[in-house]
Amino acid sequence: VPFIGCNLRKLRGELDRLLQECRALPARVRQYEGYNALHDRVTNSVSAYSTLSELQSPAVQPRHWVDISKLLNISEINHEKITVGTLLDKGLMVRKGDVQQVVARAQGEMALELFISEIKTTWSESFNMVLYQNRI
Image (spheres, rainbow, N blue to C red):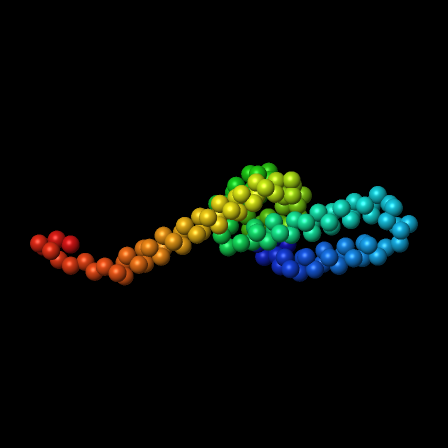
């Protein structure tokens, strides 16, 4: 499932359910390495939820996805084809701070873009150009 269209709340619910099922297994099953690997993977995915939800912010534009792809060494050029699994497999949690900096920059850029558009609107509506000495 592409990350862009992913319902993170549903994913979080499924991860929580899976984590509960893991914890409900008998102690003799929980001693196996396979159980530990699964439990660690699910726990890491749950801890990545906040970062994933930040990445779904409308402020994160395709130009920011280029930076994120470079940070995580993702070869996929089209950001719409990147999946949650790809983000997690490529070390989203290892580079969490760097990814959050890109998201913070994206949010700052969005705030500036909105502010500039408000200024343009205000200036275009507030002033009427009149002819003065045959010039505008």
